[in-house]
Amino acid sequence: MIAQSETVTLASLLNLRDFRLFLTGRFFGSVATQIQSVAIGWQVYEITKSPMALGFVGLAQFLPMVILLLPAGDIADRVDRRVIAFLSYLVQAVSVALLALFTWTGIVEHAIWPIYLALVVFGAARAFSAPATRAYVPLLVSKAQLPRGIAVSSSAFQVATIGGPAVGGFIYVAGPLVAYGVCLVLFLLVAFAFFAIRTRSVIAPADPTLSAFGRVTAGLRYIFRKPIVLGAVSLDLFAVLLGGATAMLPIFAADILHVGPEGLGLLRSGPALGAVLINFLLIAMPMQRHTGYIMFACVAIFGVATIVFGLSENFMLSFSALLIMGGADMVSVYVRSTLIPLATPPEMLGRVSAVDMLFISASNELGEFESGVMAGLIGTVPSVVVGGLGTIGIVALWMWLFPALRKVDRLMDVTPD
Picture 1: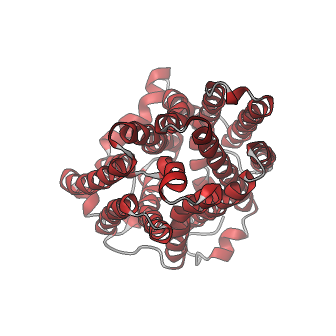
Picture 2 (picture 1 turned 90 degrees about the vertical axis):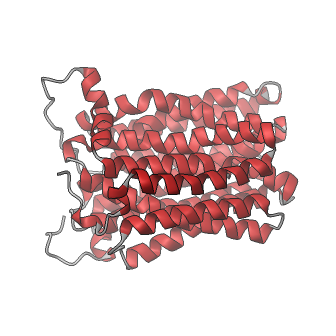
Picture 3 (picture 1 turned 120 degrees about the vertical axis):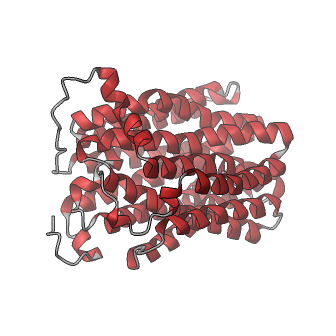
């Protein structure tokens, strides 16, 4: 780890062996998740032709996460995070092996519930891997390196999210069984990449005055005492919950844009491509001033782009809207991912990261369920447009509710105090 006074460069980050292993795990884990997501989305819609069935894909992953994330955050503060990540990715490999088994035996052609069962296992594993991995970067880099380290880590994730769906769409042409087989190999690779990391967690001594329930909920209580953190994580929760359109992409690809599974993969890559372009900009020129105002403006742009995507019947316009959505969302992700470690004591970072991940899961997986329900009730296009309008409304409301977040200037001035 470098001294605080040294210049932070990309090369100095990549010279850190454990940070390179972390990036490897984050990259291939994200690739596998995206390939799996494309395969499941197309397979489920191909079998059921139901928006609600796609919504239940998100719900099956969200329910175990909402139950397990807070206890998992407590465990991430009391057990070596490297071990937690290793075991969690092994279980994710088991879940994708179940998907392959159910597809190979033909069970899913007669009943869709086995897919949901495998996704429950996957969601449970992610509940443990998420807080452990999200709280690992501050252990691998110095405070001076942290903003750029988080941006590089996010870039690895976003590059994988660009390539993963596109690769998944083309692999799916050979069938879902092939896609699940590729995911199985990648999840095993990720598990052993984390196992090879040498940096161990700093295990804080347990507070004897806290019960098990008190420890588990400490992160939640801490966030509610910090308006800046609460505003950042809840803004993302409600903006993406309302404005997320990714769950409906199989319907847009099949019935509105008529581009098949290959087109679905490209559409799913659109937000990630926009995100990685903005992220590279943030690596080269980290945000210096007016952070709060910039974040709110970008979330509003996300809402406008969502409306454009919902109304579009042209593939290039739809892809461009998704590109803008991803770039705008990346700014919010960058601010939140940097602000939380800076505003949180190290001994609580696992629990606070678990709460953050709970909010993210609510916005993503629960958002998929909400999108499926709304599409089933009022139609796919109206549900996306209404969601985009809701996101813009949330921005206006949150700027009023959280003035301290709106007025954040320099991220590095944020401290736990």
